[in-house]
Amino acid sequence: DGGITQSPKYLFRKEGQNVTLSCEQNLNHDAMYWYRQDPGQGLRLIYYSQIVNDFQKGDIAEGYSVSREKKESFPLTVTSAQKNPTAFYLCASSIGGGLSTDTQYFGPGTRLTVL
Amino acid sequence: SQQGEEDPQALSIQEGENATMNCSYKTSINNLQWYRQNSGRGLVHLILIRSNEREKHSGRLRVTLDTSKKSSSLLITASRAADTASYFCATDGGLYGGSQGNLIFGKGTKLSVKP
Image 1 (cartoon, rainbow over the protein chains, first blue to last red):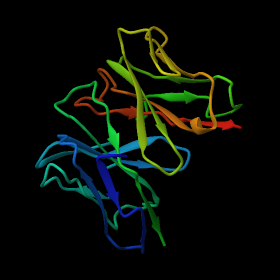
Image 2: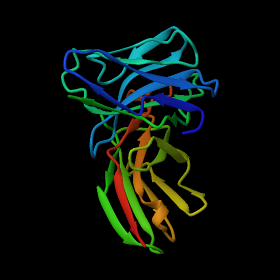
Image 3: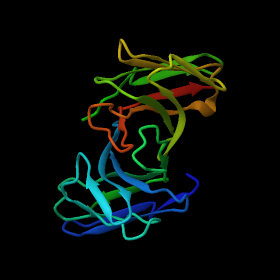
Image 4: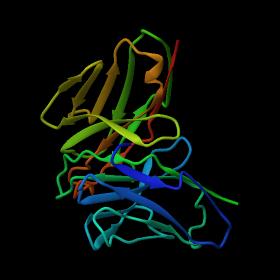
């Protein structure tokens, strides 16, 4: 988990609320990613950013939004439009530059529960 | 759009035994990576094997890649209780998506090593 942090560890949301998950890295990586993991499932890509001030939708972007105003930070907002947001959210970063051999470094995750 | 599928979904062995996990994927790749996830934590990179490599070792880990069968295997020798975790393969997708360093993860194999 070293070098990339996520907060909070646990987050509870009431229906209809937007919540923002924090992701910060001090690895000087250009690329950052947000994944969603459901129980017993693999990771699904929500959004990714290859460089500051640019980001792209992943496979399941609906109901989520991101920003990349600083190289170190890639916050994820789970909006009220996301119908089933209860899941484990993982942020990752990699050196970037479009290299297919990039290793991704993951944060410890945020577990979001909708009440 | 999950590319990799691990097999088996769950594996339970005794300490000291070897554990073998398999991953199959659908399209051409440039490389394949294996990651480990302890329960409730982020993923940790284990090993990367390129498409022109057939076998790679790292400590007690041995990874093989058969591009003709579109499959890879991860062998953990002399397993320990501390190896208990979920193991995921991830591909870069080659010609199918996965560009710009994005990875496509399988659903994982849950390994339990009993003392």
